[in-house]
Structure formats: structure tokens, C-alpha cells
Image (cartoon, rainbow, N blue to C red):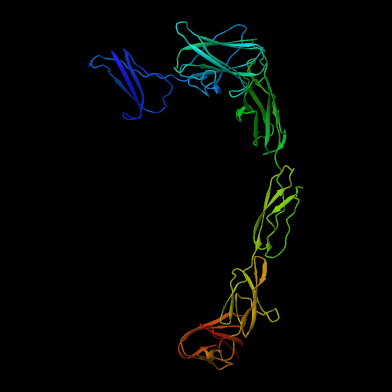
Length: 501
């Protein structure tokens, strides 16, 4: 049978990726240029002019990358006095890095590394079987994958060898084995390293702490120092025998308790290491619980009164308070101890009692807004208390300026003075009201232009009597009133005084 083949990308009419010329009894395409995740369409052709009904087989085979396809995963070679072969393969390998100058048609590479145990060492790469021809090239780098390129060996048939007499003992060298051809291969090969076998070395690790006696919650950093740890030792930190932290030569924590023990297990990757796992010394922590500053609570203060916050606690801890003292509002203050003490912060709320001194005026009656308080009205002209004026409201008996001393929550404050200018003998007449006789013995007569409610109060402002009056002539029985001066006030706020005999 004869076959030809086309490969398309992403669709039957997509980019024609490859066209393989006719071949007898079989055709195929083998390369490393496929894109992972992309869909490819395979067109199998009968390239002859004659039709055929014969059957054929088709398969797709993938080749996973070898473990050492990249320099980062280079396989460690162990030196021996003679060549002890280690199996290798290009099967599934790609080209990791730039094309080398000594083998500029290379299509595949794999990586190895070794630590020099002597100045003279040899690396040999050979084909694994004699029934096929293979080609090899090789690069040698010092200390890293991108370090100094020590040598680039061009293509050799069936084997290649690197020998150097000036290696630095203890230095790591990276070996890049290349397929120098454009055609990829899946054939196996062998590699060996000849040199002084590594002498067994004993790894060790010690740890120290930034501090071992701390105040609870203080950050502590532990540092591991390896001996014979190799190029990349691994670390497992432990607190009280439990795994903590990450694979790092340092471990930092703020959660240690008194008596906590810290240690570290190191795994050495040195070729000479025996054993590979070692445990460090143990550090036992001395952790002190912080002292809480104690203060005597400051009693509630009246707004505007001064007070101080102590800078040294009852148990001898110094520090500062914030925010600044505010004697006009209840405030919570925070005490921050002076640094260098194993103590916590503390808070204290100082209650500032406020007195409501607001007042309202209606006509000649002034009313304090505060509730649950005691009152003493004063004459602002002389700042003297008005005898008997201790109610929430005060009705002025004459024009003047008046205020109230309000006592509330153990604090006293005086309101603003309120000016009264609307009192006079003609008040009721001007407002469409007229009262007589004045002084009065039994009945007080009132003439109104409009109906209204009136209130009779004594000199302290206490309401004695309320009446609803109609438009026109009215009379009020005041015979039960004690002798003295009284006020009568309408709904509109008009006020006049009369004398009861």
C-alpha cells in the first residue's frame, strides 16, 4: 500500500501544519513542534491513481518528558573509580535553552550535574545498544545552568567524552547532553562519571534564636546553620515536636508559650551525606506573661471641671495616655506603656456629666428644658435667687432678665439670661383683654374680644388655676386664693398681674 498524509491545525480548513510525501506501506510524522492543548486534523491519503479497498492501521503516540528535561531538574551523577553507567534517554525531551554554538542543529537536550570530588574527572555518554547509530554533543557549565560554559563538545558518533584536569573540588558542574541532529530521537543512552568516589560526610545543623527570654507575643526568629548540607538542604521546623514553618533556614513566630521547645530537622542533599536526615539542638523558650497596668477609676466629673490621668500605674508601670484630656465629653483613654516593659496597654473611660441649660420662652414664662433635675431661678440683674422660684417654669412678674440654675447628675450650671420686656399694666387691654377689679376680693371680671384659655399662677410660676373663657364678659371665682400677687396669662402669652386681698 501507499500512503501520504496532511496535518491541519484547529480545523479541517485551518493552517496546513505538515504535508508528508507518499511512502510505501507506512507514513508518519514524529517531532516536538506540536502545541499542547491544540487540536490537529489528520488527512490520510491514497496517493495512487487507482482506488484501493485495503484496510490500514493508524495510531497516535505521545512521549512524556524525561525527569531531567530542564536544567532545574538535572539528575545528580555519582563518581566512581570506573565507568558505572546510568541509563538516560532523549525520549520526549525538548531543547531547554539556546542552541549551542558547537552543535547548532541540536533538537533535544537533557541535563545532569555532579560535584567535583577531584581535579580530574571524566563524563562519558554512549549509545545503549549497538544496532543503531546515535549522535551526541555536550556542554559543561560551572556552578549553575547559566554559569561559565567550561566546554562545548561538537557532535560525536555513538559517544562523546569530557575530561578535565582542573576542576575545583566541591564545585558543582552541570552537564548538558544534546541530540545534535534536527531529527529527534527516542533512543536510550548511558552516561557515567569517573572520578574519586565521594567520601562519606556527616551532616549537622545547629539553630539559634534572636532571643530566648521574651515577653509573650514578641516576634522571635530562629536561624539554622547547616554543615555538609549540600547545595539545597531542606528544613522542617518543629515547635514542641509539631511541624511548623516552611522549608527555609529561618523560622519566625509570635505565638510561643513559656517552656515551648524549638528544633529543626535538616535533610542534606550532599553526595557524601550519611545519614541524610539530622536534627538540630533544641531551644527552650522563657516566655513571660505581660503585666496589666492597674489604675484607680476616676469618678465622673462635671463638664468643664479639670482632672488628670496618672502617668504611673498603681503597680508601677510608666507610660502615656491618648487622646488628650477632654473635660467636655465622656471619653475612653488608652494607656501605652513605655517601651522595654513586658506589659499590655490599658483603657479607662472618664464620664463627663453634662447639664442641659436650654430654656424656652412663651410670653413672660420661661421653661427649662432639662428633666429629672432641680431648679433655682435667679434675677440676672443681681444674680440673686428668686425666693420660691424652684419649678421647671418661671413666670416673670416684671420686665427684666432671668436665668435658671439647673442641678443634674450632681452638677450645676446656669442658663443664659432671658430678657422679658412684654409686661405692663395695659397688656391685657392691648391684646383685647381687660381685667377688673384689681385688687380683687372674690370675683375677677375679664372682658375678651375672642374666646381663650387663661392660666393663673403664683409668684413662683406654679399654676394655681386654669379657666376657659368666652368672647365678651367673663368672671372667675378667686375667693379661694390666698392673699398675694398672681399672674394671669392668655394662650397668646399676654400676661398681667393682680392682687388678691
